[in-house]
Every structure is written in structure tokens, then in C-alpha cells.
Image (tube, rainbow, N blue to C red; front, side, top):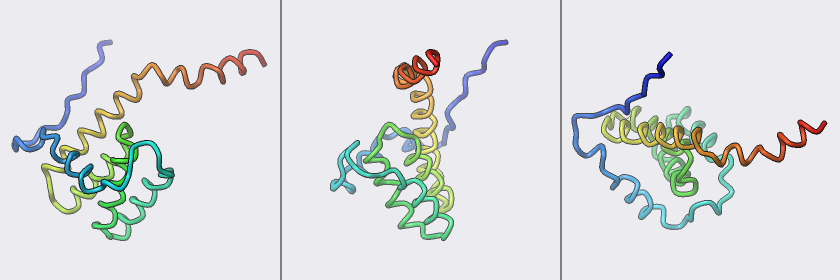
Length: 126
């Protein structure tokens, strides 16, 4: 059975493919550096803010997550949800596509098997 390739969602606007959204976020959130923050709960905090309809606060939390964990899909997905609610279709499409790309890269990354190699070895030796 042949697997279908999932297509990225497209918008009619040319701006959607622009990397300026992320560049703008990096300039705005210049007080954070990638991979050095205690950001374990930021996605959950952002979702709670969304649930309380505190959209500017949720947007900021997800932007911080994008800067702190640029390879993770969580911040991009969170921003897509914010922009879906606010009606900013172009940004919502852009960020959900970034989330999809990050997820695909993570799931196909050879490093995942390396992460679990030692654990698998220990389990096999039980």
C-alpha cells in the first residue's frame, strides 16, 4: 500500500511562505536564547491562556516557545491556534505548516533512535 504524501496547507496570499514571521518573533523576543530556558511548561501555560481567552498573553508565551525551542512544533502550533481564533488566516496557515514541518523532521530524525539506544540495550539485557 502506497503512502500518500501529506501536502502543506496553502493560502492565496504570497506572504504565507515568508520567513519574516519567525524573524520578527526573534527580534521581538530577543531576551531569550534557543535551548537554554526552563520552558518545559510553556506550551501548557500557553494553552491555559488560550482557554481563558487571554490571547495576547498566549501569543507571547508561544512566541517565547518558538524562540526557546525552534525545532519543536509546540510553539508553532500554539501560534496557529492563536491566529485561528483572531482570524489571521495567513499567519495561522503559516504557523500550522511550520508545526507540521517540525513534526515530520522530528519523527524522521535518526537522532530519535540514538536517544533510546541505551534504554533499548538495557531492556534487552534484562
